[in-house]
Image (cartoon, rainbow, N blue to C red; front, side):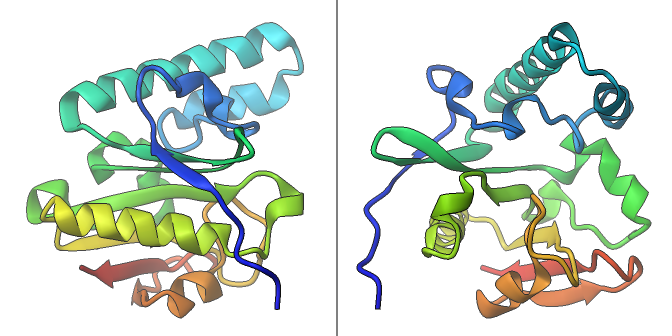
Length: 188
């Protein structure tokens, strides 16, 4: 058995926004789907920088409106994983998943848009689980009732995380409208 890895999980705030690891720092898939599609086609560094600014501004606004909305995991002072969450209304691309059952922030439901161990050498070491448990602990403390996310059914390597990971951590399938990405829920 491998020894438990020592990590530092920090809330994203204005002072560590630039620590969001690649490829997440410029990924606007959930927040600005049209920009995301354009960015996929663009290969220039200027477009990448524009998307990173857009992501930082989204975080700044969300931090002001809602408070904590993401975490960065550090190993030896280096960012190796990331998570992002907020009200489902802050993620317009939820509509692309065709589920009308996504919970509302006003109902005590927070949407986890991304939980990703970006450093591939750090995967399968329990970092994702430690990050998820920290989010669950924080959301309970803040009085939320549930966490929801779309998880990929048959693929491990994707930012939303595999369905099996969430099931192992107490989530259940809430809605199967999208067969590839079921809506998962965890009651707090």
